[in-house]
Amino acid sequence: MALRIGGIGIDTNDLAGALAFWRAVTGYEVGSQGDTYASLVDPAKSGADLGIHVVPEPRVGKNRLHLDLYTEDLNAEAARVESLGAVRVAHHGEGDSGWIVYEDTDGNQFCVCAA
Image (cartoon, rainbow, N blue to C red):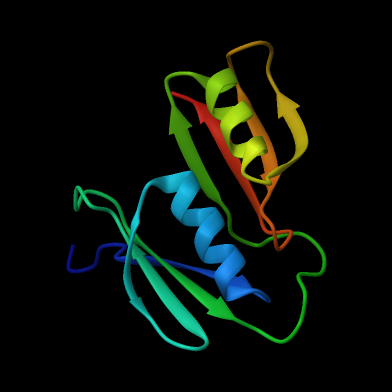
């Protein structure tokens, strides 16, 4: 294949807030930043970059694409992302299994999944 996923775009109405949230969630570092865009890069160079883009409208309806973030400790990561401002939407599974659907600070949905 000649293609690979190099980056994933996330829309926001608040660049500073989204940048702080996703930086804390992922541990990624700021790669570049302007007035309406910032990129976050994996310091280990093993994951796709995240591009944070300012848009004028809020999210409406269901996401057509979302991130699945995997962890060995679902309950610990759930508590951590909630402390960062993520809002729990649903938990599929029981205890430390399955996955939890969250909304970020802009209402974009993502999942934290048991590895």
